[in-house]
Image 1 (spheres, rainbow, N blue to C red):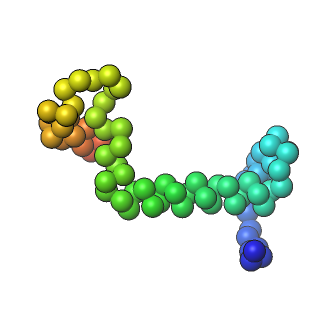
Image 2: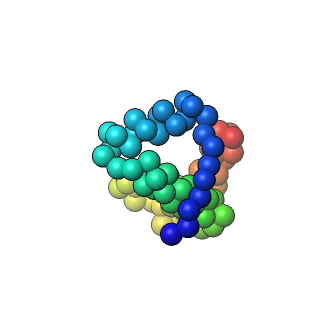
Length: 83
């Protein structure tokens, strides 16, 4: 492992301390887990095919295989409206 020193605002440090105590983990372990989550979400944002996961709609829908283009276009429009 590599040692890294960071400066945090007091509020972030206090919240990190509380979270670590609740989880019974070190602050360093909590930060490492948070970084893992960040890196995973960053890599998913860079992979356009991963964005398709879950866009087809609710589970049990039977027409997705035949109407996949329409379903994905509608999902893309909804996502763009939210931005």
